[in-house]
Length: 322
Image 1 (cartoon, rainbow, N blue to C red):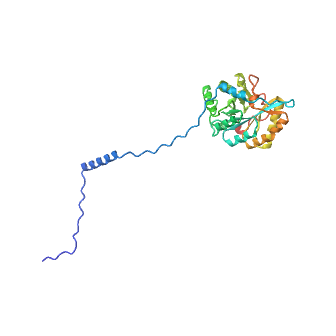
Image 2 (cartoon, one colour):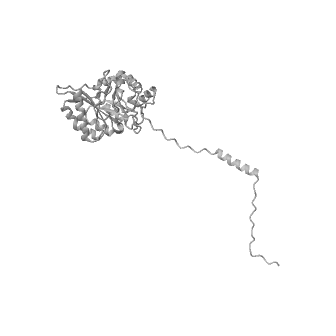
Image 3 (cartoon, one colour):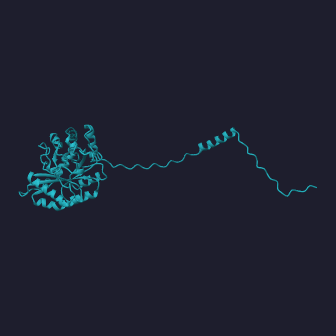
Protein backbone atom coordinates (compact mmCIF):
# COMPACT_ATOMS: atom_id res chain seq x y z
CA UNK A 1 0.00 0.00 0.00
CA UNK A 2 1.43 3.33 -0.98
CA UNK A 3 1.96 6.03 1.67
CA UNK A 4 0.00 9.32 0.99
CA UNK A 5 1.89 12.63 0.54
CA UNK A 6 0.85 15.14 3.25
CA UNK A 7 2.09 18.17 1.26
CA UNK A 8 -0.28 19.98 -1.19
CA UNK A 9 0.74 19.84 -4.78
CA UNK A 10 2.48 22.96 -6.14
CA UNK A 11 0.55 24.58 -8.99
CA UNK A 12 2.59 26.01 -11.78
CA UNK A 13 1.47 29.45 -13.15
CA UNK A 14 -0.32 29.38 -16.42
CA UNK A 15 1.96 30.22 -19.26
CA UNK A 16 1.61 33.74 -20.71
CA UNK A 17 -0.03 33.72 -24.04
CA UNK A 18 1.26 36.32 -26.40
CA UNK A 19 -1.45 38.08 -28.31
CA UNK A 20 -1.12 37.97 -31.99
CA UNK A 21 -0.79 41.14 -34.05
CA UNK A 22 -4.37 40.92 -35.41
CA UNK A 23 -5.77 40.70 -31.87
CA UNK A 24 -3.78 43.76 -30.74
CA UNK A 25 -4.97 45.67 -33.77
CA UNK A 26 -8.61 44.84 -33.00
CA UNK A 27 -8.23 46.01 -29.36
CA UNK A 28 -6.62 49.27 -30.43
CA UNK A 29 -9.45 49.80 -32.88
CA UNK A 30 -12.07 49.32 -30.15
CA UNK A 31 -10.21 51.82 -27.89
CA UNK A 32 -10.09 54.36 -30.69
CA UNK A 33 -13.84 53.96 -31.26
CA UNK A 34 -14.49 54.62 -27.56
CA UNK A 35 -12.38 57.80 -27.71
CA UNK A 36 -14.24 58.97 -30.82
CA UNK A 37 -17.60 58.39 -29.17
CA UNK A 38 -16.59 60.20 -25.96
CA UNK A 39 -17.87 63.82 -25.92
CA UNK A 40 -15.14 66.47 -26.22
CA UNK A 41 -14.27 68.36 -23.03
CA UNK A 42 -16.40 71.44 -22.52
CA UNK A 43 -14.30 74.58 -23.16
CA UNK A 44 -14.01 77.15 -20.38
CA UNK A 45 -16.11 80.23 -21.07
CA UNK A 46 -14.08 83.13 -22.46
CA UNK A 47 -13.89 86.16 -20.16
CA UNK A 48 -16.25 88.93 -21.13
CA UNK A 49 -14.39 91.83 -22.78
CA UNK A 50 -14.16 94.99 -20.74
CA UNK A 51 -16.45 97.69 -22.00
CA UNK A 52 -14.56 100.54 -23.60
CA UNK A 53 -15.49 104.08 -22.61
CA UNK A 54 -17.88 105.74 -24.99
CA UNK A 55 -16.03 108.41 -26.96
CA UNK A 56 -18.25 111.22 -28.05
CA UNK A 57 -17.59 112.67 -31.50
CA UNK A 58 -15.97 116.11 -31.60
CA UNK A 59 -18.39 118.98 -31.43
CA UNK A 60 -18.98 120.91 -34.64
CA UNK A 61 -17.41 124.30 -35.12
CA UNK A 62 -20.73 126.10 -34.71
CA UNK A 63 -21.31 124.49 -31.30
CA UNK A 64 -17.84 125.50 -30.08
CA UNK A 65 -18.63 129.07 -31.06
CA UNK A 66 -21.84 128.91 -29.02
CA UNK A 67 -19.90 127.66 -25.99
CA UNK A 68 -17.36 130.46 -26.30
CA UNK A 69 -20.13 133.03 -26.66
CA UNK A 70 -21.89 131.69 -23.55
CA UNK A 71 -18.91 132.39 -21.28
CA UNK A 72 -19.76 135.39 -19.07
CA UNK A 73 -18.16 138.69 -20.09
CA UNK A 74 -15.40 140.29 -18.08
CA UNK A 75 -16.47 141.94 -14.86
CA UNK A 76 -16.82 145.69 -15.11
CA UNK A 77 -13.44 147.24 -14.45
CA UNK A 78 -13.40 150.45 -12.50
CA UNK A 79 -10.89 153.17 -13.27
CA UNK A 80 -8.64 151.77 -10.55
CA UNK A 81 -8.36 148.47 -12.40
CA UNK A 82 -5.87 148.38 -15.20
CA UNK A 83 -5.25 144.77 -16.18
CA UNK A 84 -6.72 141.35 -16.80
CA UNK A 85 -5.03 138.02 -16.11
CA UNK A 86 -5.99 134.47 -17.06
CA UNK A 87 -4.74 131.26 -15.49
CA UNK A 88 -4.54 127.84 -17.12
CA UNK A 89 -3.96 124.73 -15.03
CA UNK A 90 -2.75 121.88 -17.22
CA UNK A 91 -1.57 118.27 -16.84
CA UNK A 92 -5.12 117.43 -15.72
CA UNK A 93 -6.43 113.87 -16.05
CA UNK A 94 -4.47 111.76 -13.60
CA UNK A 95 -6.58 112.52 -10.52
CA UNK A 96 -10.10 113.76 -9.84
CA UNK A 97 -9.11 114.95 -6.38
CA UNK A 98 -6.95 117.71 -7.85
CA UNK A 99 -9.79 118.76 -10.17
CA UNK A 100 -12.25 119.04 -7.29
CA UNK A 101 -9.80 121.15 -5.26
CA UNK A 102 -9.30 123.50 -8.20
CA UNK A 103 -13.01 123.87 -8.85
CA UNK A 104 -13.65 124.53 -5.17
CA UNK A 105 -11.55 127.73 -5.33
CA UNK A 106 -14.28 129.38 -7.38
CA UNK A 107 -11.91 131.29 -9.68
CA UNK A 108 -12.22 131.41 -13.49
CA UNK A 109 -9.43 128.90 -14.19
CA UNK A 110 -9.10 127.08 -17.52
CA UNK A 111 -8.70 123.33 -17.11
CA UNK A 112 -6.35 121.81 -19.71
CA UNK A 113 -6.63 118.02 -19.88
CA UNK A 114 -4.06 115.50 -21.10
CA UNK A 115 -5.49 112.80 -23.39
CA UNK A 116 -5.25 109.06 -22.70
CA UNK A 117 -5.32 109.47 -18.91
CA UNK A 118 -7.44 107.55 -16.40
CA UNK A 119 -9.64 110.58 -15.66
CA UNK A 120 -9.32 112.63 -18.86
CA UNK A 121 -12.98 112.43 -19.84
CA UNK A 122 -14.33 112.62 -16.29
CA UNK A 123 -12.23 115.70 -15.47
CA UNK A 124 -13.26 117.50 -18.67
CA UNK A 125 -16.94 116.81 -18.09
CA UNK A 126 -16.75 117.90 -14.45
CA UNK A 127 -14.97 121.17 -15.30
CA UNK A 128 -17.51 121.90 -18.02
CA UNK A 129 -20.36 121.31 -15.59
CA UNK A 130 -18.83 123.96 -13.33
CA UNK A 131 -18.68 126.47 -16.16
CA UNK A 132 -14.90 126.47 -16.55
CA UNK A 133 -13.09 126.69 -19.88
CA UNK A 134 -11.99 123.19 -20.96
CA UNK A 135 -8.89 122.72 -23.12
CA UNK A 136 -6.89 119.89 -24.66
CA UNK A 137 -3.32 119.74 -23.32
CA UNK A 138 -1.84 118.43 -26.56
CA UNK A 139 1.36 116.33 -26.15
CA UNK A 140 4.12 117.45 -28.52
CA UNK A 141 7.72 116.54 -29.18
CA UNK A 142 10.21 118.14 -26.73
CA UNK A 143 13.73 119.14 -27.61
CA UNK A 144 15.22 116.77 -25.04
CA UNK A 145 14.88 113.05 -25.73
CA UNK A 146 14.95 112.48 -21.96
CA UNK A 147 11.46 113.98 -21.67
CA UNK A 148 8.55 111.78 -22.68
CA UNK A 149 5.44 113.72 -23.77
CA UNK A 150 3.28 110.63 -23.30
CA UNK A 151 0.70 108.73 -25.29
CA UNK A 152 -0.83 110.47 -28.28
CA UNK A 153 2.17 112.76 -28.77
CA UNK A 154 2.84 114.55 -32.05
CA UNK A 155 6.36 114.47 -33.52
CA UNK A 156 8.26 116.31 -36.23
CA UNK A 157 8.60 113.13 -38.31
CA UNK A 158 4.80 112.92 -38.67
CA UNK A 159 3.40 114.20 -41.95
CA UNK A 160 0.40 116.52 -42.14
CA UNK A 161 -2.33 113.86 -42.40
CA UNK A 162 -0.81 111.93 -39.49
CA UNK A 163 -0.66 115.05 -37.32
CA UNK A 164 -4.31 115.79 -38.04
CA UNK A 165 -5.35 112.20 -37.34
CA UNK A 166 -3.50 112.11 -34.01
CA UNK A 167 -5.00 115.46 -33.06
CA UNK A 168 -8.49 114.14 -33.81
CA UNK A 169 -7.84 111.07 -31.66
CA UNK A 170 -6.46 113.12 -28.76
CA UNK A 171 -9.28 115.63 -28.59
CA UNK A 172 -11.86 112.85 -28.36
CA UNK A 173 -10.51 112.26 -24.85
CA UNK A 174 -11.50 115.78 -23.77
CA UNK A 175 -15.24 116.30 -24.29
CA UNK A 176 -16.24 119.94 -24.33
CA UNK A 177 -12.78 121.25 -25.22
CA UNK A 178 -12.91 124.69 -26.85
CA UNK A 179 -9.17 125.32 -27.01
CA UNK A 180 -5.70 123.78 -27.01
CA UNK A 181 -2.32 124.40 -25.44
CA UNK A 182 0.85 122.39 -25.94
CA UNK A 183 2.23 119.87 -23.47
CA UNK A 184 6.04 120.07 -23.78
CA UNK A 185 6.57 120.74 -27.51
CA UNK A 186 9.79 122.75 -27.31
CA UNK A 187 10.85 121.00 -30.53
CA UNK A 188 7.60 120.75 -32.49
CA UNK A 189 6.40 124.32 -31.89
CA UNK A 190 9.56 125.59 -33.60
CA UNK A 191 8.58 123.94 -36.91
CA UNK A 192 6.10 125.89 -39.00
CA UNK A 193 5.51 122.96 -41.38
CA UNK A 194 4.23 120.93 -38.43
CA UNK A 195 2.19 123.72 -36.90
CA UNK A 196 0.31 124.53 -40.12
CA UNK A 197 -1.77 121.32 -40.41
CA UNK A 198 -2.52 121.47 -36.68
CA UNK A 199 -3.80 125.03 -36.96
CA UNK A 200 -5.89 124.00 -39.97
CA UNK A 201 -7.48 121.31 -37.81
CA UNK A 202 -8.12 123.76 -34.96
CA UNK A 203 -9.62 126.32 -37.32
CA UNK A 204 -11.94 123.71 -38.84
CA UNK A 205 -13.19 122.84 -35.35
CA UNK A 206 -13.55 126.42 -34.10
CA UNK A 207 -10.85 126.01 -31.43
CA UNK A 208 -8.36 128.53 -30.04
CA UNK A 209 -4.67 127.95 -29.26
CA UNK A 210 -2.53 129.10 -26.35
CA UNK A 211 1.21 128.74 -26.88
CA UNK A 212 2.73 127.46 -23.65
CA UNK A 213 6.03 128.96 -24.88
CA UNK A 214 8.18 126.01 -23.86
CA UNK A 215 10.60 127.38 -26.45
CA UNK A 216 11.50 131.01 -27.01
CA UNK A 217 11.85 130.11 -30.71
CA UNK A 218 8.26 128.87 -31.01
CA UNK A 219 6.41 129.90 -34.17
CA UNK A 220 3.07 128.42 -33.09
CA UNK A 221 1.26 131.68 -32.39
CA UNK A 222 2.63 133.22 -35.60
CA UNK A 223 1.16 130.33 -37.57
CA UNK A 224 -2.12 130.65 -35.68
CA UNK A 225 -2.20 134.38 -36.44
CA UNK A 226 -1.62 133.77 -40.14
CA UNK A 227 -4.37 131.16 -40.33
CA UNK A 228 -7.01 133.07 -38.40
CA UNK A 229 -6.97 130.87 -35.29
CA UNK A 230 -7.66 132.81 -32.05
CA UNK A 231 -4.48 132.68 -29.99
CA UNK A 232 -2.65 133.81 -26.87
CA UNK A 233 0.85 133.39 -25.47
CA UNK A 234 1.87 132.28 -22.02
CA UNK A 235 3.54 135.05 -20.01
CA UNK A 236 4.50 133.34 -16.73
CA UNK A 237 5.00 129.78 -15.56
CA UNK A 238 3.62 129.79 -12.04
CA UNK A 239 5.12 126.72 -10.42
CA UNK A 240 8.50 125.81 -11.84
CA UNK A 241 9.37 125.57 -8.14
CA UNK A 242 6.80 123.79 -5.98
CA UNK A 243 7.03 126.17 -3.06
CA UNK A 244 4.03 128.27 -1.97
CA UNK A 245 6.11 131.40 -1.37
CA UNK A 246 7.80 131.13 -4.78
CA UNK A 247 4.50 130.49 -6.53
CA UNK A 248 3.11 133.64 -4.90
CA UNK A 249 6.15 135.49 -6.30
CA UNK A 250 5.23 134.17 -9.75
CA UNK A 251 1.65 135.40 -9.26
CA UNK A 252 3.06 138.80 -8.33
CA UNK A 253 4.99 138.74 -11.61
CA UNK A 254 1.81 137.81 -13.48
CA UNK A 255 0.03 140.74 -11.83
CA UNK A 256 2.83 143.10 -12.82
CA UNK A 257 2.70 141.91 -16.44
CA UNK A 258 -1.06 142.42 -16.56
CA UNK A 259 -0.70 145.95 -15.17
CA UNK A 260 2.05 146.76 -17.65
CA UNK A 261 0.63 145.15 -20.80
CA UNK A 262 -3.09 145.15 -20.06
CA UNK A 263 -3.33 141.32 -20.20
CA UNK A 264 -1.24 138.38 -19.03
CA UNK A 265 -1.55 134.58 -19.09
CA UNK A 266 -0.15 132.29 -16.41
CA UNK A 267 0.17 128.51 -16.61
CA UNK A 268 0.46 126.18 -13.64
CA UNK A 269 -0.20 122.63 -12.54
CA UNK A 270 -2.63 120.97 -10.12
CA UNK A 271 -0.14 120.89 -7.26
CA UNK A 272 -1.43 121.43 -3.72
CA UNK A 273 1.12 124.25 -3.40
CA UNK A 274 -0.23 125.99 -6.51
CA UNK A 275 -3.81 125.72 -5.31
CA UNK A 276 -2.86 127.12 -1.91
CA UNK A 277 -0.96 130.03 -3.48
CA UNK A 278 -3.98 130.88 -5.64
CA UNK A 279 -6.24 130.88 -2.59
CA UNK A 280 -3.88 133.27 -0.81
CA UNK A 281 -3.00 135.64 -3.61
CA UNK A 282 -6.11 135.93 -5.81
CA UNK A 283 -7.75 138.55 -3.53
CA UNK A 284 -4.53 140.59 -3.63
CA UNK A 285 -4.56 140.61 -7.43
CA UNK A 286 -8.00 142.20 -7.40
CA UNK A 287 -6.87 144.74 -4.81
CA UNK A 288 -3.97 145.75 -7.07
CA UNK A 289 -6.23 146.35 -10.04
CA UNK A 290 -6.03 143.06 -11.93
CA UNK A 291 -9.16 141.05 -12.68
CA UNK A 292 -8.98 137.30 -13.19
CA UNK A 293 -10.91 136.26 -16.30
CA UNK A 294 -11.39 133.20 -18.53
CA UNK A 295 -8.57 132.85 -21.03
CA UNK A 296 -11.16 133.08 -23.82
CA UNK A 297 -11.45 136.80 -23.03
CA UNK A 298 -7.76 137.40 -23.72
CA UNK A 299 -7.55 135.82 -27.17
CA UNK A 300 -6.28 137.70 -30.19
CA UNK A 301 -7.16 137.15 -33.84
CA UNK A 302 -5.00 138.35 -36.69
CA UNK A 303 -2.82 140.70 -34.64
CA UNK A 304 0.91 140.53 -34.20
CA UNK A 305 2.03 137.47 -32.25
CA UNK A 306 4.93 135.13 -31.97
CA UNK A 307 6.43 135.72 -28.57
CA UNK A 308 6.74 139.46 -28.01
CA UNK A 309 5.01 139.23 -24.63
CA UNK A 310 6.84 136.09 -23.54
CA UNK A 311 10.41 137.34 -23.71
CA UNK A 312 10.73 138.69 -20.21
CA UNK A 313 13.91 137.01 -19.08
CA UNK A 314 12.51 134.05 -17.12
CA UNK A 315 13.25 130.52 -18.25
CA UNK A 316 10.81 129.30 -20.86
CA UNK A 317 10.39 126.03 -19.03
CA UNK A 318 12.14 123.84 -16.52
CA UNK A 319 12.67 120.08 -16.54
CA UNK A 320 9.75 117.96 -17.65
CA UNK A 321 7.66 121.00 -18.61
CA UNK A 322 9.63 121.39 -21.85
